[in-house]
Length: 252
Image (cartoon, rainbow, N blue to C red; front, side, top):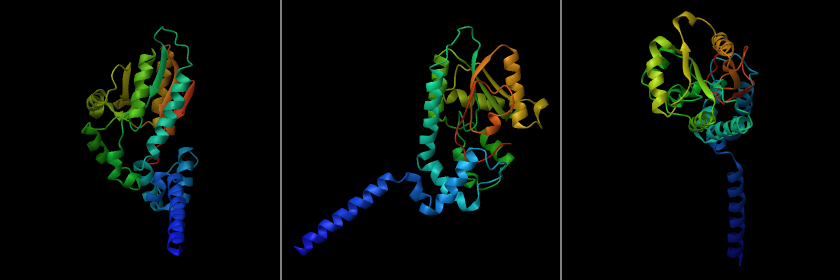
């Protein structure tokens, strides 16, 4: 009888702990449990642009940010934002004159650099321009699948999609175009990279100028999607902007 009672108690305890584990986000335990509370707050502040500018992920948050990126929550967050974008896009009355436009950033919006940033401890090491250029030259960035689906639906819906990136046109133009095509980004209106004349401009200045030119050409920018606030700030940002998560780096 006593043995049976112990077995029942053990089963109850197991059930309680199993339920608690099921309610815990997958990245939480991998990221250090309660020790990640401060880092979750830091990540929220970074995503809402309340800690700009920042150069690296805080050292004590390396494991937490890495667990967030690899543990499933990052992908959930990306898909949730894309669902909001699609809900908005479905309500837009497309005129059919070829001037209804969307702007998508490229790096960590259309294609992912997570494999590269794994070697940089998911943003805990300072940005290394030469190392990133070498990575980009390989042309092996995989598509962010939820954004690839968004892209396809925008094209199907009759929108003109412009891909705008701060990548260097002279050195990375061809490889970036090939990388995008290989990952299914086919049918966009134009891929716009940073020209030699635009070197030295901040991302905000460069992308504002690109959008200004598009508006002057008659395009109606219904939406603007990027992983950096510098993708979404400045003038001519469009009717709505959508920020994708990215706690690995900050582009001013």
